Image (cartoon, rainbow, N blue to C red):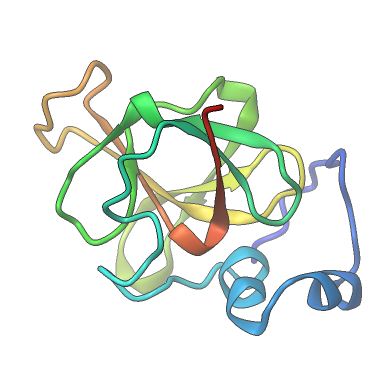
Length: 139
């Protein structure tokens, strides 16, 4: 992942992250990988609750901000708060995108896109890897 120079509330070296995360989780969260489309645990989930960073547990998205975009990954139109996520310019794969990372630990979550025409309050699509999240169902 591209270093940001930012200090995070939760920091660990790669060895500690590897002990905590599975190989697939590490690849996506710490190496900015992407899980395959339409296979993630939360792609079609409609359970009410809060989605948190799988690496550090920071609450990131609410289920009532999730929408069905049919893109193959969970989609949200807004994070819980802007300071919950960090935005990084991503020019990999020959395109310009905006990477979304956890604001607490710097883990890769996915990307955010604008102007795609979805009928949401923000006209944004936070395209987030299921493997980057855990769902805390509403009690």
